[in-house]
Length: 199
Image 1: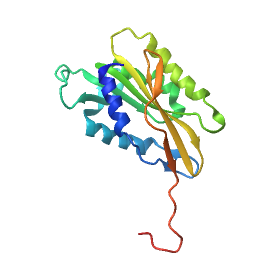
Image 2: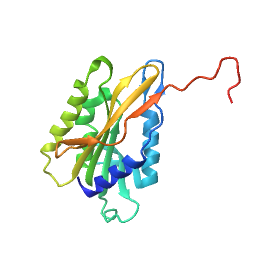
Image 3: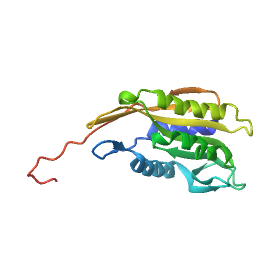
Image 4: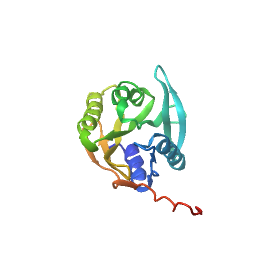
């Protein structure tokens, strides 16, 4: 994998520990909680411009440069064009819409962060189709030499008391994947005893 993305994923693997999602009574919601955590993580590790304009496509979620040693800020070329999408039901829209910014932004690399779901009765079909669509989109990319990757958070278990994700790094041009971080497991916090004071 490209050295820029390799550096990003090493930092991600070492320090990305998102907080517990919010349980709304029927589902674990990660969009707001993890988006804010991701923004703060990026600011700690990189120089970042959020909502970076991309011609004909609208704003990119984040344009990323190394804090030290970047050679591309002067000509407007970012190191990594980053888009994220936590809603697993927006797979088709993401592929034809926001993900295209990773290809078209003036960048050395394109990176997507996406939740997929393979929990309960749904099986892995939808998740596999989502990832397969990104592979298909990228395998013939010859416009420039940018590296293209996906960090997939695959929801593999969910109940009212527990949710679990496995995380994969996909090299979208080489059509390969590997586990990225240890499984993320979250349990519903215990409630304080009724009738007592919550300190």
